[in-house]
Image (cartoon, rainbow, N blue to C red):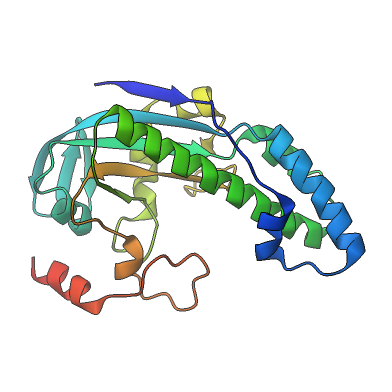
Length: 228
């Protein structure tokens, strides 16, 4: 099975775009963050790694991807008609992350976290688009460990995912802690798979007031999975 390493991204992020999230009004704050935003984009070197995996078998809630076993009823249901998935990890990059942690002002640190999150978002978008194009995937969906409710895909299976991808830290600088936290924190991992129906974990998530929600909670989908 193939594995790809992607480290060429076109990260374009203006302060005006970033300030839609920060809502800065003071001239002094605007001047500071305009400079820091430019520097963050200059330093940013996002990286992605991806491995093509076969869906070996699905039995109940158990899914085996290229010899690695995962436990997730949602994954089992989503992949029941799928033969190939793409296990991936994407990070904003150690370069901009290490630089941002030198900031001693906690408020500015929060603003820089927003900037790194936007850098990651642009890298994810470009990575997904490039992967879908290269593999001729017309429509796709993704799943990530720990995203949404705990029962969707438990965060503890992150270690298995990293092992399945292989040499993640060596190729991207992204590492996994014992508690399955990714460092840099502005990183994401998961599987991408062909899907005409689409899937967004948020549809199964009951967490209220989530700032990153991409779709409303749909109790009918959770009920359907419970009956599957």
